Amino acid sequence: MDEAEETTSTVDFDVSVVLPAGGCGERFGCDLPKQYSLLIDQPVILHTIKAFHRITWIKRIAVVVNAKFLSYMDQLVLDNKLDKVVVVKGCTTRHRSIYAGVKILAKDVDMSSVVIIHDAVRPFIDEKVIQKIAVYARSFGAAGVTRPLVSTVISADDEGLLRESLDRSRYCASEMPQGFQLSVIKTAYEKSDDHDFDYGTECLLLAMKYTGTRAKLLTGPDNLWKVTYRKDLYAAEAIVKEQNVTVQVNFTSCQVNKDLKEAIFSKCRSKSLAVKENTGLESVICNSVVFIYSNFSTSAIFKNTKCVQTSAVDSDITMTTPLRSCVVHVYDGNLLDKDDIFIFMKTVSEAMENIPDILIFGILHFNVGDYNKLSDMVTSLVWNRDPTMCGQTFVIHKSKNKTHKNSEIQ
Image 1 (cartoon, one colour):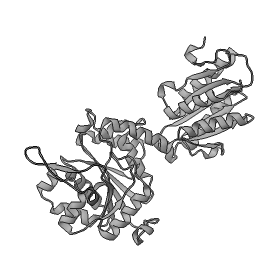
Image 2 (cartoon, rainbow, N blue to C red):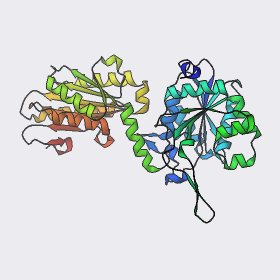
Image 3 (cartoon, rainbow, N blue to C red):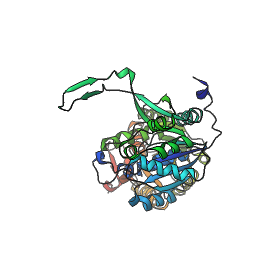
């Protein structure tokens, strides 16, 4: 570690961000540009913006978009209360769009401040990496993230025949984020010619070419890749789930059964879910809450679920994925009481309709001593978060050894 790395715990200077998002995503294979495709019920670009918005020392975020998406982005910013964001009209090429964002920022910030440039379709960022890039940019004028090459780079001649193969150990892949002193990147763009704007893609090269600033390079983590193809959305969804799904289990009015607790916790962890026992509904800091009742109460379900929704609505985690609530009634008996079933079903459905911004599932389990199936159901609903299952009640009972949805109960 050098001195610059060691001082990244504190950023005591002005830092802004430019997120270029004006591309049409030709390689994505869809009419809708990839930055607006849904990732866990939110556009990819919104995940990226929120990731930066949550960093307290970042003061401004310029999001540069195609002209036809200006009103859409303005509304997205308004709906999500993103008060650090300014939406900027993009241009025909990447460099021109970035320059548009830089010029907007230059109107309000000091030229010695730092600007972070990051692709809108790279939703995963690491605050420690951002800090290092900001500090390096402040010290060296420019800084960038790299990754080792995973494939050998070769070139061909005009006839399509192999010409040369590069020594992979001497090269690396340039990634995002990149950071610059505002004066450096603004001057670089002011001196760039049409060829740079039309065909260039590397901001660090412009800084070196036109200001003599040689960027400090940092090897970054492997999650800095961008969504380029449609298949990348599936990989991104898996990462979002694995990184952000935390389950809080509340044994409400329920004598804690050791086997039940172990089964729930072990199944959740097997899905890479972080799980913790109830710490009090007033301090919900997760995006999945499981209520386990032994004494069924309609009012309790409404009260507790509403409490979770209220306390979690402004948390960082719920900004990434919707809040889920799985209501489990462990029935202390072996007989199937249809009145209890329909009351429970009705309660879950009404809660789903009357408590916004939350996905609610119900499981009615008749205590037969085997909690594996119950644990599998809880984990599956929390992990998969299928919206078509919202408001559904699932019944697990002994007689048929089957799980039924509420639509199948007669």
